[in-house]
Length: 78
Length: 343
Picture (cartoon, rainbow over the protein chains, first blue to last red):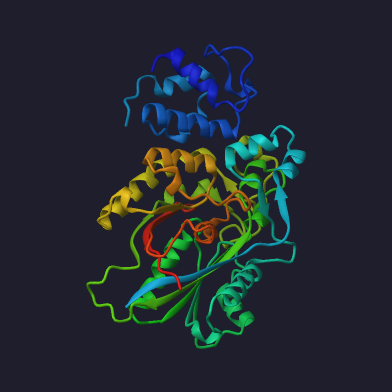
């Protein structure tokens, strides 16, 4: 999945839409729409779009949106 | 002989907690957002003097009211709860006494959550088809809301209290060994490595009086060790790993295809998770029953509540094949095919 596609899909998982399109450098903790519900939406999106079931623990080390992208950037579909 | 489910009844506490109530406490989450993500609008909340045995008695009385059976028809009680009245004695014993059931009944508690009804059916079937009992009263009952921290918006949004009573009886007495089961086959699963992801860590013998908070940043300040802690992402990834595989394994064991199942009733965890599983398994929406809008996640009661709801609405008919899957706390999971043959 290319980064731009990931960013647009990621934006749909947020509980509230960002004011501007994301570029990946944003801190997740600073995003208004990143909460416990959006984390589940993100896991579901990755499963649906890429057939990948993320290890939940891998999310805890992600600080930026780019970090989340790197979780899936090179992963083959399951 | 073959065991079959003859009747199911439900009991809810009177008090409720609506999305509007929650939105007033947690303004950052709107009524629409809660409904949209969870599929839940209301939850029933047990009163300060209302405990699992009270809800259980309510469900059984409803059952005796609506189904033609006598107290003396009950030979065994299986009561599934994770919020017993006491560490000891067994809550099933208390319920036996309160209902005035004969002292000749067997009674035991099962400590399981979301998988508990399916496990309970497995045990009930075993008791009946091994001729140890002709009838089993399978009760599910929990007051999980008493475990929730008032500031924990995630768990308070999801969980509700309820009890159900299911009468399981021997049917088809003349059935020989070759008769297909009415309850089963079953697939069971356990993964205790997930124990810490859905836990109320004090109140048992390991940490009987601990009050220190111990988990993730957002809610450390509002919970004690006696409160329920739920790691939503871990639970979700667990369901994605195990539930689809378990469904396929159960169908294979039953020598059935997805199309041979008339109704799918999953543990009613939350609508978002269930919709994702439905799509993943390619189950048609019309065959996938949801019944949590007005009660939330009622733990082991969620599957029998949904079965009762489907039966009442006409969606579940005699002769239908139903696939039920319970999954969650433990981690524990179980699946079974039911051949619906009520009284």
